[in-house]
Length: 276
Ligand code: HEM
Image 1 (cartoon, rainbow, N blue to C red):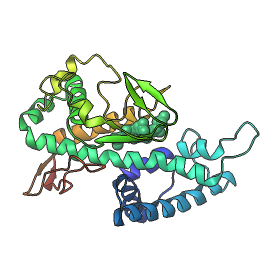
Image 2 (image 1 turned 90 degrees about the vertical axis):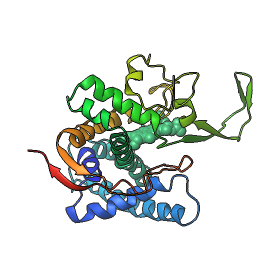
Image 3 (image 1 turned 60 degrees about the horizontal axis):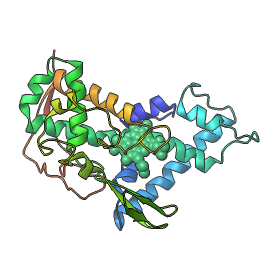
Image 4 (image 1 turned 30 degrees about the vertical axis):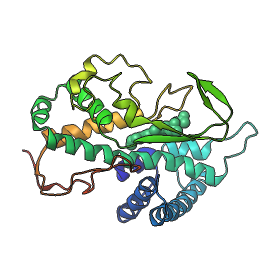
């Protein structure tokens, strides 16, 4: 995931740097809700990746590195404000990292795809036909069913009332992502893994919110939702139709309160064979 994220964003990375970069980007999202050592691992990782990307941005600006023009690296590095100035290097580096990090995080959804295939082998059979509509429904159900990002946090900017609830400025507020995706008022038998439920879903942006709710353009719904779905589809097809593998004994449980949540064993597969 790290390699494709870099390639797509125009960030040059050497083969021998990928492992460290993956670990650093992973530490950043695995520490999203952490305190203590994990939090500090995330902070250190952020500092070192910011410095490294910052140097790359300087090279783009002084012409010693020329990434393709339609990549995030090029567009962010060469962006000028209304007065003709570049963004400061740290802000630009953070924006580039905001593209790389969540693409690497899609690996967690791929873990949950593997878990679903393991727990519901009958689904694997249905997916073998490569039916695009069923693949889409399966991916949506993985994103609804599992608690990757159980909640999102925000500070209330100014007082407001919504549906009779008062929100006061400065209050820390949680959006219950998992709870909304499992709300029995919205979803029939919410704890059943049932991809075909999406045949009837009407696209309401407040019902199904694995990557935030509302509108992409006016609200904060995840700008990377389409990218995530496409990467998940390609990965699912690879796992179902291009390889065979075994799932050895391991701890497949996952937390309902961690941020992010991921199967405790991080899902190990073995005896991977490419199908001929
Ligand atoms: C890996 C799975 C992903 C999850 C679970 C996820 C989750 C989220 C959530 C919950 C938000 C809303 C945050 C809020 O309202 O406070 C968000 C926003 C955002 N995400 Fe994602 N995301 C994922 C993948 C991606 C990818 C792959 C990209 C880019 C390539 C991306 C880019 C963004 C951006 C730019 C925003 C901010 C949107 C805005 O505020 O206007 N995300 N994401």
